[in-house]
Length: 139
Length: 139
DNA sequence: AAAATCCTGACTTATTTAATAGACATTTGA
DNA sequence: TCAAATGTCTATTAAATAAGTCAGGATTTT
Image 1 (tube, rainbow over the protein chains, first blue to last red):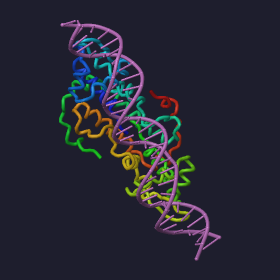
Image 2: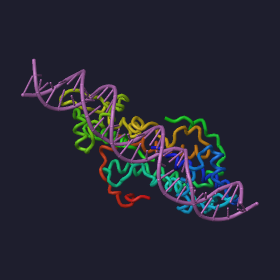
Image 3: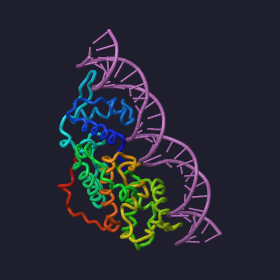
């Protein structure tokens, strides 16, 4: 029940690009260093995002990547779907017995609701609202 | 972003036991055969459920397992937590940067909301409500 | 021409998943 | 009392996935 580093680092890349939106390209090297991640690994993650039309690449010295759309037009769900596949707690949800199928569908819709309604703008502009205490520790 | 067979088969076991609640023990062999699963594998899954106090075992011929509480007192979340660990889309949610932390917390709470509010009774008594069409195919 | 970048495919390593195997303990019913 | 039907425990294994690493090539700018 976890999102892997593919989706997590992919979001990291896209938030960084959203923060620099309108300011020219950002290289993967810069993003990798700022977040202490492997540049080579990020290359593998950004390829599907480029193929899906969410980022554009600019080759050569002083090149890098830029968002292909505005930060409001790209949701967290877009990124997770490209890098992790369909948002669903099980594969073959249709084949499940009705009671379980209904449960998986409710989980799927709950997660989709969050991911599809959170845009890169929301994530890039987020300022800590200090809600740390009550939510901090979970079971 | 998937629930593994541990949680899925664990739910299957518990729903079977809920259906037979008050009717004496059900053996793993019966459940394994009815669902075409490996009996030995189910043994490994039910052990933590026994240790957590959700099922009781009855040894010997004509033995098996029974629910240790009523089907209303056990939620899908109880089972998933025992078999899959904490319900959260990432580990170390506290260490994440605020924007992403808030996103993971919203996903976690959405999933918790569904799992903790679905009881074994709901799952065992479920009759298909024919909501198949609109929800059947997902992106 | 040199440096900085993106681009591609193959390879590797670690972890988790999903079992499988085998021996042992307990209880029931004939 | 004994055989069959169960649960209990520990170890091992095979396959898949996750998470990187490596090597080299292509493109653009200075």
